[in-house]
Image (tube, rainbow over all chains, first blue to last red; front, side, top):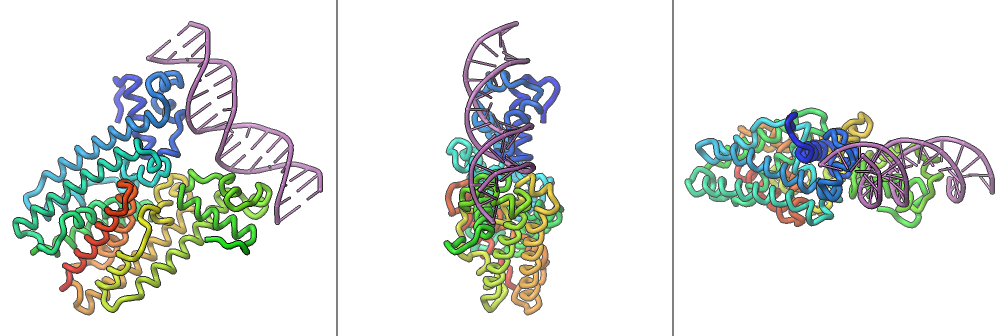
Length: 192
Length: 192
DNA sequence: GTCTATACAGGGATAGAC
DNA sequence: GTCTATCCCTGTATAGAC
């Protein structure tokens, strides 16, 4: 996440990304950010207007990173089912949860237009991307024509996000693994 | 949630349940609980040892309520697909999220054995209950024998929890509705 | 049982020196 | 650009009076 050569601004952003992932927006304090970044108060408030400003910057970056990763995974595989399955069963650390999805549960994030936007954009993009793959599968006759691409895409995205909830509740990655495997099996069973 | 006739203890518990749902554990302060309950500091600390104690009590109650509701819904319908579909598409307020699942994203909840337990038990119970229905459907020949009941159950539970994330991210219930509809369609397509 | 007073850390930010 | 001092509010809890 961050390397010795990074300057203060970069260290502040990277630290904020990590803390938002671990503790959410309400749970992350400027002081904690400064400590992790090895920067003083003055530094942080010189470069950013305050916690919301820094958080928006960090969230935009996390969103972009996630998008790039997902896009790469979704490009691999030679059939719709294989590509969706690849996305579902891609390597993850379920107990950490999703760094973007996590933000959606925070009332302060949801209550702020600016803070919610990167989260919204990420999932809108993801659902569209997944829907395109489903539509392709339906078009080539691989998947049943009964499947609505947008609905199916939402279900796939939801399984992953919900899998994190189940895993964290259980204190074990097992429910996550079951959920994505279960979803992959349902997709496989929906082949035309 | 709470009625005029409730005594102080009940009002404290009910207020805590509401606040935990709305703002999570970190986001809920004793002061806010007292205000909503119309009780003073002394009252709260007389009846409960502190915030964690009150939170555990409130979470146990929310878990029990949720379980009762889910159990009722899962008992209706005359086929496995109908029962799972009924659970998925049951009336909900997606923008509020799940009062139990929400807790799983809170680091303090996950970090405490006592606070996590009610959440864990709720989802373990739910997955078992759903798995029983899937198994039944497989046994009667309604559902494809390819489906693993536990995996499928986890996927169904995850779709709902993840649907909340998508809805809150979007600021609209639409992605939730799409996700559950998509999941119901996949189940219908997996009929033997 | 409930109230008020008190305590002390931490959150979030500003001011001004260097 | 960064540091230290300072500020005020809130979180969480205890003590003791009523």
